[in-house]
Image 1 (cartoon, rainbow, N blue to C red):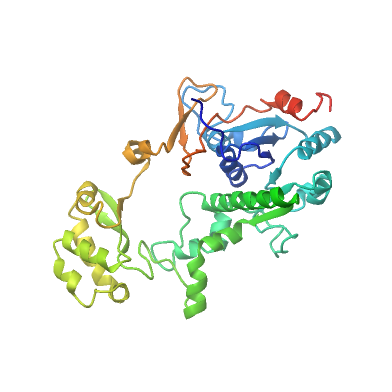
Image 2: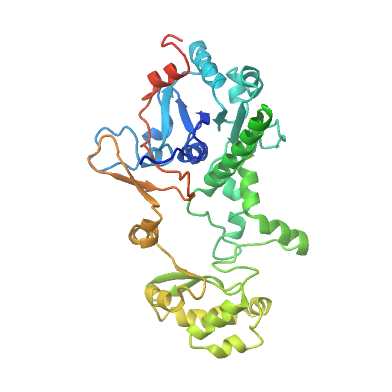
Length: 395
């Protein structure tokens, strides 16, 4: 029995995005069955030339970066600076539901392919864009002309301001959340607008600013500052409002322990062989433990640092919110990851080896999203796409 089509089967998405943020957004749609047509310049998306590469891949058509976020998509190459390329693009738009781009503000306007122009061609069109500081159509930022990448969004949006070992040493978060969080929010916005278009026949402009998305992700800094006047700063591996809640050293690495509820604190104390701490009124309630944070962290660390991660897991797993700090090798060996199919094999052109990329985290009982195909070759699906949209080769 063949798998059911994805929940977004039938949704046609014209994808002009490059780098990480935009392609991650359209990947989320493609994973759920949307037909994502990646429109690339004649030389291809620049990230095709990014690594890493398989050891035996001498062709280097694309690397792991491109493979990961462009799976499940089809490719057609168009020169949007040419009259013919723009005409073909307009034909695609006429038959599509969504256009997604992440150029700087004004680029599409200068190409003669503005939202207003495309809306006249297809009134149902959902036009979605992702920029560092948004689009003037939805709110003119003083930074609208600034280019932005993940690290810029993390810096300005607040996440670096509360991440780091000490108050005066901010740190970049490891994964590119300045890209992937806005991308995820944009995917949600696209689906909300598509739902509205289905009901009313009316498309709209959907805009995400990377800065805004990271600020929204860091929501607690807003209410902390508003309610108390405090300016939150990096606090290492702890939490300003919960205790114990953070990372603790083990004999062979680090573990995460979280006891926001008082009963978890009592269970932790019992597991540590220190039940008296669970009954001590100085530590009975979360706010009490926050007030005596140094004592609490010292007591937990004195226990964890004598044990391996596996031993802490044996003591706490299933009883207290706990997890070991995993590296990639740990993740590849974890039975949870296998059971949830979170590492997916894909073929890689130019290599005899199977590549492994991250899977689809959203689980659905009827229309499960999946990795159906590798990332496309440049212009690989041009003939099929032109035929589907009734576009001649000369158009």
